Image 1 (cartoon, rainbow, N blue to C red):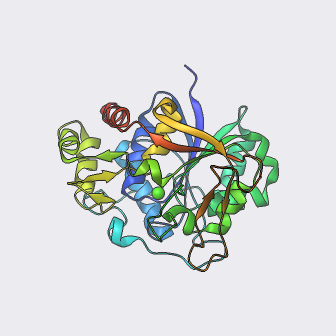
Image 2 (image 1 turned 45 degrees about the vertical axis):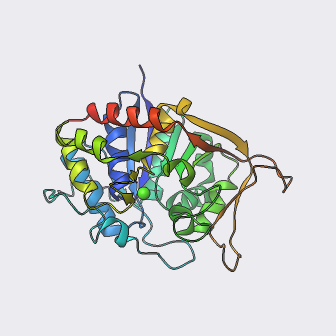
Length: 306
Ligand SMILES: [Ca+2]
């Protein structure tokens, strides 16, 4: 089987760590590049976390550093959710910097895309600043992008505001550029992340599964994306789930825009499920997930890791 090439743009982050583990060990995906973006914590910390994970997995994937802050608005600090390092709970070895490219993430993405004989899928699982910069600076890359499968937004309520989800509200201007890009965009929103839950009994299975399972189990002890008792929310892993097993989702074609001006709703995704705005569809939005299928897939996928 030829592997599908992807680029993951990430801000690890505990749920990012899970997404990376599954993607890096998948027989179906070839991760060509990892780009980092300030988000859950600052750029230095998320980059160190990405390098820690790659060293832990023994995977030599190039890493390029992206934007240190959003396009326009001030950054949000989410260290209350992910701990002060962004990935508290496991003692990683100090990573080498060997995998770090000299190029900025935007230039690295452009190069990898333009050099690729086949289109590449972009998988942003953090704020969309790098992707917006890429599309704005180098529009010629668009024909090399198969699609953008992003974790972010919500069709209903938010997790960083009444109506706003973290990855989108962290850089709403960037999100607007991505949704207006005319590229095929798949939005895997908060709605499904809230149902993609890992419970104590699932987490216990990870503990003795393999090294990766043990590491993730330990990270979960510090993760505040939900509580262990009522289920930990695997937000970012749902984007990888869409790539590998889209049939577990209910998906609708619709129009999505980003509210930039709302006095109380700035940064929310306006998902026009009923067509009030009379705009052409610009995204596929995952509106539901089969939670049982997800859980089975989640555990089976992590079993493939070392
Ligand atoms: Ca993330």
